[in-house]
Amino acid sequence: MAVVTPRVFVSHLSGVAVFDPNGDQVGRVRDLVAMLRTKGSGSREGRPPRLLGLVVEVAQRRRVFLPMTRVTGVESGQVVITGVINMRRFEQRASETLVLGELLDRRVRLVETGEEVTVLDIGIIQLPARRDWEIDKVFVRRGRGGALRGKFLRREASPSKGGGGRRAGEALTVEWSAVTGFSLEEHGQGAENLLATFEQLRPADLAGVLHHLSPKRRAEVAAALDDDRLADVLEELPEDDQIEILGKLKEQRRADVLEAMDPDDAADLLSELPEEEKERLLTLMRPEDAADVRRLMAYEERTAGGLMTTEPIVLRPDATVAYALARVRDPDLSPALAAQIYVCRPPDETPTGKFLGVVHFQRLLRDPPFTLVSSIADTDLPPLPPDAGLPEVTRHLATYNLVSAPVVDDSGALLGAVTVDDVLDHLLPDDWRETELHGEEQPAGERPEENGWAPEVDRGT
Image (cartoon, rainbow, N blue to C red):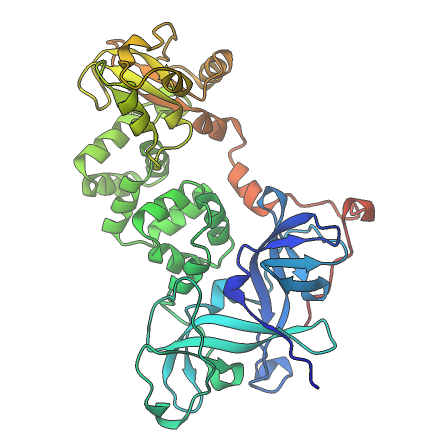
């Protein structure tokens, strides 16, 4: 009796943990690398593509190549491998295709009918008695339907002449040989199904995905993200990527995304743009958002005023502990901003009325809900002046063991708060995001086996 090899759909592999033979996790799957076999590659047209390996994200968000010959099991939401991993940074070659990044959402045609379909998922299978894997199925939707969220409902079928009476928008699974058009360059490729596979990623991890896509695909994915999600991702990208992505959006959308960013991050990004473009975008932004950004841009970059956010939690003296805790629970707040509240007289928006003191989150947990925040505010903690330099800001946070600190002007008004993550951004080298996304190259000849190195593996020709 023939042995049936289980099929795996690649959307189920996105973010899956990779374990070594000892059961230790070594990373997570971020993409799959395939070689499309066209007429020019020496193989007959229509032969299923060979799967070369996985792109695995290991420590410090470094992406490395793992040959499929090292994969011993794909089951129960995990990938098990054998041998050691070559930690050299993954670089996509011209003959290679990223399955998740480049094939999902592609519009192709059914061979027999010529009907246009959209790729929702790709099925891969291990060849019998071998460690080689290849693509064998394509899950498509007729017309230009969007993503199927959650578990995909797949219907085994093959295209028939005239469409067989199928409805527009119907999803079905077909053989790889039943579709054509994967090797053609496509303009305006969608991104809904690619994003569906990455919807659980943190913004920093999704930024890593975007960074490693081609400029064309990166622009398509960015265009498909909603404003808030794109704003969060832009804040985690290197400056060059930020400018590139922003430049490919329509002008009004650029302004909308800048509004959704934290004011300090928006100010940093705008400061890198030509003066004319910067002023045009500020004009398109909501007046209140543009005012915050303009205020931040008036300060030197490496000062408390240039580092601060203008949106800390500000409460009046008669607010209760119960109300303060409700404000702290806001899921859109960063942990640093949620760590303390600032008690000020009206107005409540920065710049506020007179700054009275700080209430730390732990103090809110210790006092009864009806307690007024003014009665428990720390009034002895000195605030930072807006012109305090980065060394002074760093010493202040370290001295008082703080994750954020108030910035107050000469009149006693609260201007904003400096958080430790913004300070770290400026203490690290200017290219730290680029280094984190790429990983550091290892010198030639320094790859000892005992440190987990292995000779570079041929990924096929």
